[in-house]
Each structure stands twice: as structure tokens, then as C-alpha cells.
Length: 413
Image (cartoon, rainbow, N blue to C red; front, side):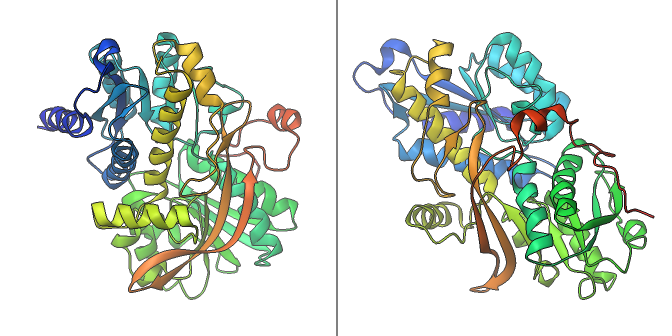
């Protein structure tokens, strides 16, 4: 059933996004873009947001650019790395796509990167794995979303210098991306005088967070959490039911209170301070237009997943314009993609560094109820944040990747 549903969805997307041939468009055929995303399971809403953001940008361009139609073929990878690889192979070998976009889970990214490198297929991933543009860069990657640590580095500084926290406990999923986000926060928090006094890791399929919440140090000034999707919803509800919400403030890794999950939350999310490269409350003309159009079309506010795929599609189309639609010439297309500069996107200006990684504004937000719904209201902006923060790039890359035990928990009992 899932396979047939995914194929049906692919057909619908293709039909939806293809417009009639314009003069000369048929000569070179359409530009085909593959979109492996989760459409079932805990991350289904994230996948829906990604698909919708990507589709919106393509549709705004009339479904064609540089004299070529755009075909988008979505495949449901179920949020499973093995499935991501299987569906990506299908997109490349059967559907003959020119570009792959989407893919946001850390494990899925590492599962498919060697394959795409071998096939020399350009890809614009939404996953935040630091090393994709650091210690293990790919010549075929352009990443317009943020790395995991781009929001975390300034957030650690903010928690220490502005919020004045001295002792913070950390709670997150037991997997690589959570280690990176937490490690980035820890490094700058401790560099500014704070102490991480505890690290607790939970399996990704955890249904009952009680055993972990009962271990949290009650003398911590705050708890830093990294969860996403249904896991984020579940942990905040459990946190409130344990009576901890009014006692220990929550600092959220970027996905904890993302707009994709806020509709599933209630008062337990109020007051969470988090950091991300996007919030739909940004008061800019570009974002207001985008949010208004997105709400009209989909009936809810966009998330950072929506925006990342929207900007990914914009980047692909700008690269096609600059390369005269010559996507088959992979070096030419990639060179054009890495030179894309967008003065105005819903999340702010977009430019890429020499590795193909975007410089992004990072917004510190507080979750509040606005107009009857939960929203993340920006309270501070760090402009043009590099994936290396303020560190020297060469020195940074000589350090090991953030991991379960790096940085070490020097202040844990």
C-alpha cells in the first residue's frame, strides 16, 4: 500500500507541476528533480512541509524555467535510511532525474551521499549534518539550509550572556544529529562561563520520557532539549505532566518547537526559547508575502522545512537560468548553483560560502500564543552566521566532530 501510494503521489506531483510546452521547451525535454522525503510515520508532517514549500516555488515560476519544464517526482522514504537509498536509486536510475532535493534525516543523508557522488548527481539536501560541508564535503552538494550547529553556536552564547544561565542540563535523542546540535550549544555556552551539568540520551522510538525526566537535575537553571516531530510533542507533554515546566525553563534545539509541530502542542510549549534560521513571524515584506500565500494554499503557517525547500527550488531555478538550462552539464550547473545569491527570501538574504553552505540569519525566538495560535516570536537576530561561527575555519576543522562524548561533560557529577 505504501509503495502504491508513493507512486501515485509521484504521478500527482508530476502532473501538478508540469505546464504545457512553450516554444522550444520540448527540444531538450524537462528538468527532472527527485524528492525523497518521509510521508508516513513520525516525520510525515515534516515531509509534507518540504513537499509543499518546494512545489510552491516551482508553481510560482509557472512550472518552467530557461525554456524547460520542471518535473518533480516525490518518493516516500518513510524516514528510513535504507528506504532513502532505495528510493534515490529509483529516482536516478529509473526516473533519470537530474537533481535530488529534500532528504533531511542525518542517517538518510549519509546513506545516499556516496551513491550520489558516484553517480555525479547534484543534490540540495535539507539535512544539517555538519561534516557534509566540513570534514567530508561533496563536490555535488549545495546546501541552502543551516547545519545543525549554525543555530546552536549563537544560542549557547545567548543562553549564557543574555539569559544569564549558569547550569544547564541536556536531554536529547541518542543519535548523531542530536549530538552535533547539543555539542555546538555546549561549546559556546561553556566558552561564555556556563556549565553543562548533565547529558541524557533517549532512544529515538521513546514513548515514555518519564524515566529520563525523573533523572533531570532539579538544580539546573534550564534544560536544553533536542527532539523533533512526534517526539518533540510527546516530550513537552510529559515534561509538563511531571510538574517541571514552571520549575526549569526549556531551551529548544531548532526542531523542538518548529511550526510543523506547534499545532500538535498546547500550553506546554509556551515560553520555550529556541534558535532557528526561520520563523514565520519575521516582519519582512518577503516573509509576509510567503506566509500569506502559504496559509492561503495549505491552511497553516510554514515551517523551516517548508522554507528550506522553497529556497532550494529557487536556487535550482536561478542556477538553471544562469546556465541556460544546461542541467546535463553538471559542472556548469553546479558552478552556477554555488554562485546563487538571493537578496530576498522569506528567511532573509541567502548566499553560499566556498563549500556550498549557506550563510544564514539565526533567530532566537520565544514561543507565545499570538492570535489564538502558538507562534515563535523572534526576540534577537544574529545576521549572516557562518557554519564555523566566529571560530577560525582551519582550527575548527582540526577539532573532532561533535559527538556523544565531545565536548566531554566536564561538569557532570
